[in-house]
Image (cartoon, rainbow, N blue to C red; front, side, top):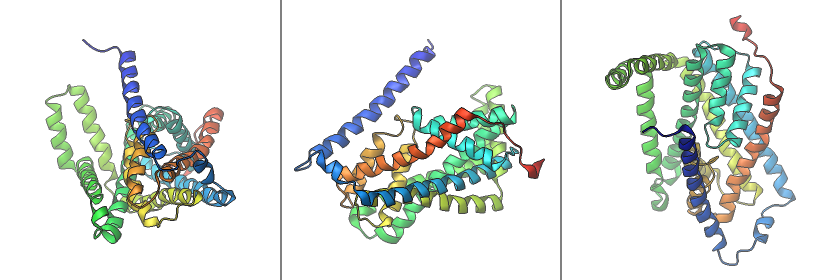
Length: 333
């Protein structure tokens, strides 16, 4: 018997709530169980000297949003969706707003795909989905490369830190296999033939079309462009955490952030909790403890970085409320 859609949605929400609250409880317990813990410790983290690094964190995230939107635009253009960069930037910020204010971490992506559909016509549904999905995956793939690079350069010979390289290694290999499957004609056709024997013909046809769309990204020039843009975008976003750390008085080398934050980012991107809360803070607390950062500071860094994102996403709220008609890219007119 099929489950009622409302019941299914409620059950999924409850599961996410559990995944959010259980790690959050352990985070809280780890903080309050520290010797001489007092609520005043939280207030002492902030001072007048916190303002400047917080402002720099805001600037870093704002700049990363500009480069991330440019990457999204390049991917959309490969799918023959041509909109002005300024308008896409509005849609991008609206997506950020929905990511921060809707359960899970995929609400913003769904909103962006919907907006592309509304402004580009029925044929743009697959284009928006393919470009947005690839954009999200490539960002996570690139931060994983950062983690591996830092591990090889600075942490490989540290017995206490070397173990944290293995998750990044497996995630990296998993992404390589995924991209090979998405962009390879042979692997894509093989997958479609296998799935086509199990699923209805209509779904099989859509899968074939989806793989055809992904193969549009097989361009050396495009890959060079998105590699450069991802390097800038993801570096700036890791610097957001670094400056949030400075804002609360954490004196830690940037290499630690490039090593740990990618794992935190991947866990945060999974739609298994509400807004990434709980698992994100628990993992950050566990990892940064290995670098000597107290539990309270490591959690506050994550919350402060989230607050930075929240502040900037308010531009998306204004863009969503004001609306606006899309403008086609003049280069394609």
